[in-house]
Length: 303
Image (cartoon, rainbow, N blue to C red; front, side, top):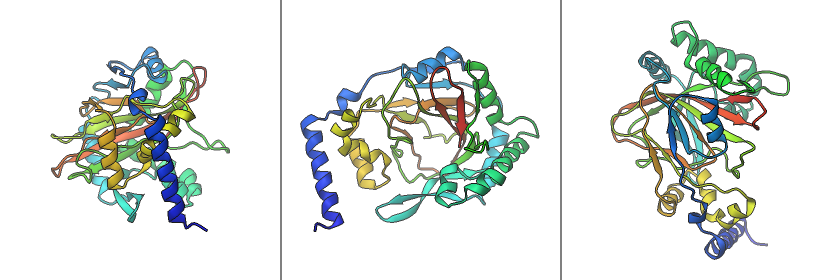
């Protein structure tokens, strides 16, 4: 009986053959504009229909410095995210601040504490950092609720308990990936009927890095994925060899400059990265995942 390693190698060789015979990443590329402007229903509709690559709302937070300072201070005692690579479990470039991301709670078997304690504590942390009033995440939810006809709310579990609507993220330089870590958060076909998006509020940016890179590449069917699976499957890998191959095979990304205070929304089913930097500067942001379930359904937020 073939060993697991031999079976893995055979599968890899098969997908490599399929991609060489029927694949072609250039066929999955569709140039799209990056919109800059207010958060409106029309702009959201274009983003959700995949008619724009990203939506940047300049100056969404008027004074981001105090919240950035609070996140950086809290990161000193926060837990770093862990990622799996061929070398085993390693620390990532990202530290979650203010609460525990849901995927980490699931991995740790700690979802009960996530819902019973962590969500409320994270909300208090962000509101305290905002001086006791509404936080930037509260503002995001309200703005999305106003802009989207069916409204916006927190994602809820089967018992009606809300998820985080957003959490702090700290990236401290020098970053592990000099060019940025190319990835998708959801490896799934693009559909105008639903999808997963991210909303990032930038609070502090390094002087020489930290901009977004987004690839105008997407697959819309299982066949398009399988025909290019040898390359596309690497979008969920943190191994250095896979990252080098992605950079070599993918077309040039669209660079999306962002400044402190800006809000940026994009589809996380598209390859994207944060440009790395070599200095000891810190990047501070807030991130929410925005679930779009159709034009007549409410948007839901989670983190």
